[in-house]
Image (cartoon, rainbow, N blue to C red; front, side):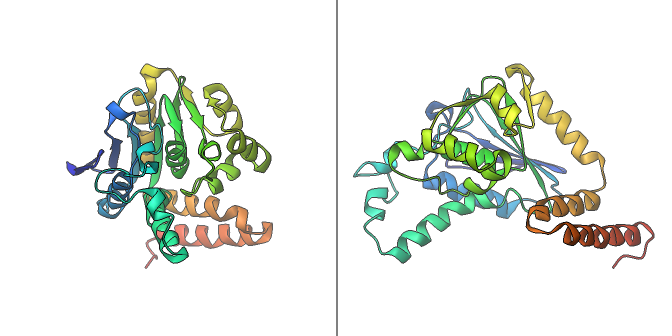
Length: 259
């Protein structure tokens, strides 16, 4: 079932699985504010039955990042140039960037597990979109890069927090400050990629992972995800208490004593 098809974003749902496709391969799935509005909308319209969301890019690249036309004086047709946006008040500029971030912030919500299927280039906003997901399955031609600093900017699409969480501060700083490419072998070694497969195996690998995620009861996965997502913010004893509370809910539910 097609849920959305606009501005280079195509969203379908089939039972417990939704697929969000970046569908502008002629421009290597370069992103625009319209792309971000469509991605944010995708998160709002997911059917309640969906448990796994797969994010993929059509064509040889996952996403080459922001469409550079956004920085030209005339900007992208129908959009405010970023150069004109910069002339607004602090409040207006903050609100604009916050709106852009909405496209990147729903992928880790507690009721779904999101998988980025990444091939080819994942640069800048593309890298941050892959980082927005819970899991990343990558083809062996993947090339991650955070190019913002080379443009005099910073990564601002909610990508810095998951990047530091995955690879640590020092490596995250080096990746972002140099803008260098991180290729498949390194991505797997440092934890950016959960799995690296051959280019022709990406779709099957994502399907296998999706099936494995759906094999466990939904509530158990939701509770486990919440435990792990909050672990770094809790002390050891707080995490133990959170485990006990979650397990109590699960046991009562299995015994038919839940709410």
